[in-house]
Length: 259
Image (tube, rainbow, N blue to C red; front, side, top):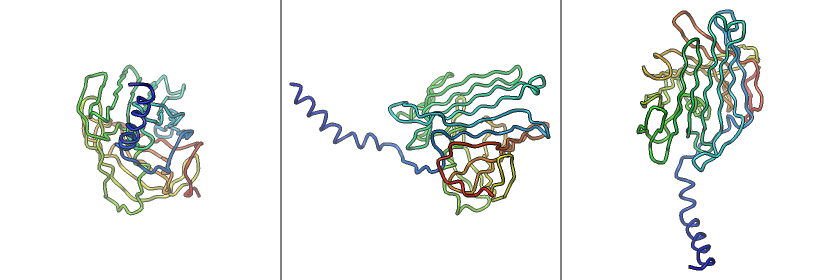
């Protein structure tokens, strides 16, 4: 086969199959977030600011032949709290730009004397999670706990009623868990970054997932197309930990609920 025929064959192949290949995954309309978004939170234990948390999308990376948002979530205790309980946690996910599902997830935990490092590559084409602990079967579009949060931000919840649930699945360690997101209603709240009209959701994570039991976390999101997280309340054995938004930058959607 000469070079001209070979090139022509390639053109025919991609014209017939290239479009189908690129469209084998779902496409999700996303007006909520994009590259450059960075959210900063004060993490409070009671009346004490114990740490700082950041959620950001610094770039788009190429992974598995697809464009993916590099999402980085970090929690660090402040120096004055380190003596009591030092935390240096980092979560990363690589989120498909068009389909809003994960290709890769990393977890690096440093909490007191406890440490854990875990990573997983989600082969969404073959239905496999290839992790530091083995290879496991997964359903298509399965989430990690971070990607699930960003996916929920893309949803239109205006017709949801109190008690309605969003049905998702997340993979953690070596298993797939049901992950229901319960809609709790609306509330206006004030945090360091301002006053916002919010919707309230509650992830209901099965035992063995990222959180230990149901009802362990409540999230306030702005009631607009950005659905920016404004506050997170997490129940712990000796009380609760609140993360409250203090600064935001690089928003791509329209933030209309700030008062």
